[in-house]
Amino acid sequence: MDFTREAWERAMKVQEIFLQAMSGEISWLRAAEIIGVTPRSMRRWHCRYLRYGYDGLLDRRRRKPSSRSAPFEEVQRILRLYREKYGGFNGRHFHQIACREHGVSLSYSFVKKALQGAGLLPKKRARGRHRRRREPRACFGEMLLIDGSRHRWLALDPERFLVLMTVLDDATKQLLYAQFFETESSHAVMTGLREVILKYGLPMVLYTDRATWAVYSPTAGHVPRQTRPTQLARALKQLGIEHKS
View 1 (spheres, rainbow, N blue to C red):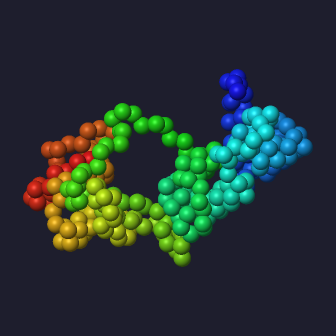
View 2 (tube, rainbow, N blue to C red; view 1 turned 180 degrees about the vertical axis):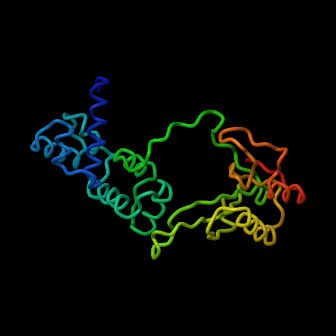
């Protein structure tokens, strides 16, 4: 069944408002005002959503429930869970915790789209050709990935920021090392690498982002200067490890 472009755009707008109301960001009365319908019409749409999922916001003549729909209460629970307890988490991390700690069974892509539709996660642009996913290395230990994630990790100390330094094996995605540090520094990076090398041996390649401890780039967005190697770059050269960023 074909619909006009305006019909699709309105359905998408209605879906976003619905998700915001489901997450508790706005009231259902306010949602009706934004969409431009009466509270009674909002209740009818609410019923269609409960029965048919997102498709019910567009196709009023549908008589068969959509196989892609999810229980309204479950979607609402997930949105409120993120807004009230896990605000600031990225979609992947939140989905892992929600599945492990709160019994969520919906797919990552569904949860991510619901959070984006409710305005709780940003909608990122698709990456260009030069940023497409590369093929992982074939052998364990051939390439290591090291990175730091700054976040309020401690539930009992919610105002304290810590950096979680992690080292992953590129081929298997196995977590080889994880440790909290106060800052993402050369000391934190070198400490993590030392632990991994002593346990697993030397890798062929180390992959990092373009943090100040990894490369020297005096101006943001410019190509790093190889003429001024960092402490990490000098150590990798002595060990015969290739550095990619």
